[in-house]
Image 1 (cartoon, rainbow, N blue to C red):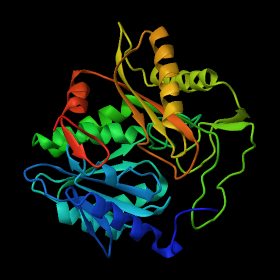
Image 2: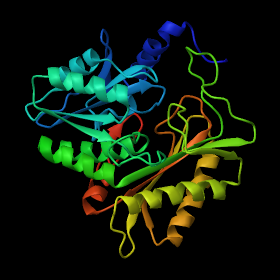
Image 3: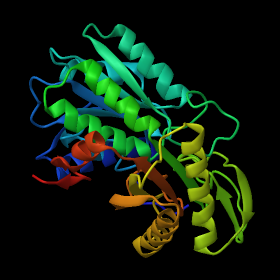
Length: 334
């Protein structure tokens, strides 16, 4: 294993310290327990907090700032943050309008965020993201993982919260965006967790994992390496089948946001190739891509691979996606 590391036990704190130093205009780092929060606390708005295991950068710390999150709780690599992290962070950013937790649908995250919510004395609610359509034979609300679509949820809800909207309205929009977003990932290689010092899973030089999770969890199946168009076709096919299962209305020429997300070790050249392939396929299905994002937004350490996320747009979602945002990883309109 070759990684830029001093001592394994110090990896997370040193990384968080570097992030806070590099973005000192945007965030503050608190320790014992550790969490990051907005440099200039927002007033008269629902406070948004998210978090999860580290290794998915820029998710979630990279989305703290105007138009998105108020705080983020990073756990150790691929490990849920603890309830005391979440509770302390929530109390730090809480406002009279309440606190909204945005939680990826993983057992550890869900359990620990629920414990924090129960202990929090201010009004709060939770949005669970579950956009990963790779999980087969699962109901919509159970078993599905929260992956790159979480970024879309955080952006849209963050925009609404800045307007002074109520906690109930912010939760409703988050759930709406989550339902209208589906993602499918593919891995070319495994990732290596620093503490383990070896690849999370073994995969042949000529194999790929279709439907892989952002921690290296198994996908739908393993197949031989194919041309990019064939890989993207399977991802798009799975997403459209998921939309059909959700009974989303696709009459006329529906508009969508297409997010092509890298897992950490895939060159941008290849990510844009994936975007071209997906956009071409979706056009054939009568879907107009009117919003787009390409890059590393929800990574899996050093995994080579990518995910395709598609969000069915309406005027409300488009408005909140387009609205100004100023964070370390996303910024426009400011």
